[in-house]
Image (cartoon, rainbow, N blue to C red; front, side, top):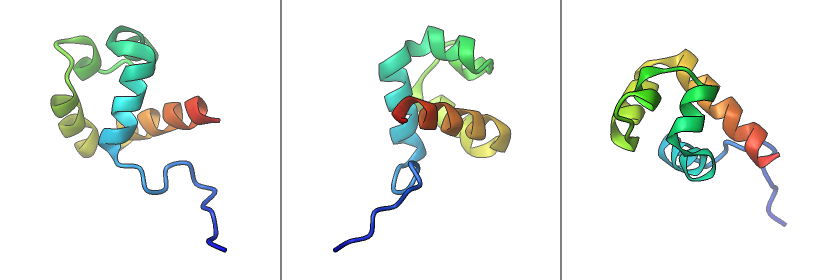
Length: 71
């Protein structure tokens, strides 16, 4: 029997996580919950991924919000 991972981020790419959050909340609500410019000014997946990959504190906020969504 294959062991299941308890980490909800296991096997999930940042792009997958961000896409799920945008699908669920939309850019406007996401920008209200996580106050970063790439969510509020001309938002897009590609530009947001670039920022999140270079900014650990912002990435953590996105990952934490995703974990709350899936629990």
